Length: 363
Image (cartoon, rainbow, N blue to C red):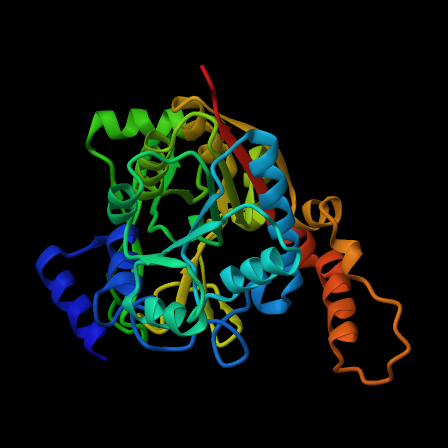
């Protein structure tokens, strides 16, 4: 593949790439990156499912949350969704909003970097008033003053990360290299010592309570994105991030010795993220402690953190259950009942994902 040639050329010039550099090419190369190319990613014919692809009730519950949040915090009725995927979530939210005849004049914006996914969004949301933008820069130009809701579902885990490890009080970076002689794979991991004292000190500050010989993940791109987002939004704005992640001592589990970074290819988890370059999603568990730490620097408070199952249950999920005598298992009522059970009982949907709600402090 063309991306393989690009990676080989990069490695021939630089000997190694940081994982961040590799992910930037594998996921975001303008032509061959996974998120940028015209391949199905979501659903049966893709590589993974999202909560919004399970049922429209996911968007329905969130529509109620958005209305309540706007009224409770006196926000402008503007919702910005980052990484809109195929547009199903936005469509379900708007449908629920209109079905309940909400009087708030909703402005819904989707920010999507991928041209391919912007086309999917346009097709799915045709006939709606949803605004589709390609970047945060365009978002800021369009809304120089913003006091509304930010929503991002499975977006934080898509930012490229760098990998580090501490051994005998010295820091090393885990990097991508060409496959060693005798290995079948084209790429492999290696470790290089950290020479810069300021980088080592930064790692000490971030990972002071982590175990040695554990691969540790940090996304500087994500931290910069959060900083920019928090800075742009006005006081009182509310942020909802939905993703899978860990906090505190959870990161010390032996299963995370090699970190949480993984690949998803045709609904199968791949523990080696260096295979199927450009054809496979690469993801990792979000470090919620890092998210909260970055928020505090920008005077943003975490006001809620819980599993997705708990969040949906507390916000009206059970209201979608129907007492039905219909025998057709494919009826709308039966499908919704199964979806409700999935969101409560499926270990991934209920407990694997977490919801964090934050608010920018008012002076």
